[in-house]
Image (cartoon, rainbow, N blue to C red; front, side, top):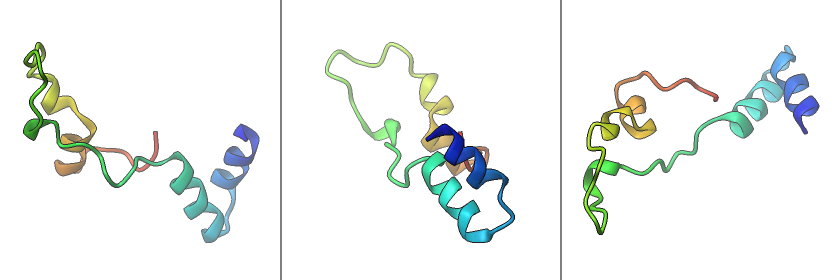
Length: 65
């Protein structure tokens, strides 16, 4: 699978690149941690700013990980 993803990522074909980005990308439904309340409270509230959801909102989340 890793070799397939590497091949798709290096391809000049736009369809292959989109498939690569789909499999290596972040899901569309990232959780918005700022609205969730953990049962025992949040021991790292500063982590919310570091979350992938917040990074995407700021335009800082890369297309793939």
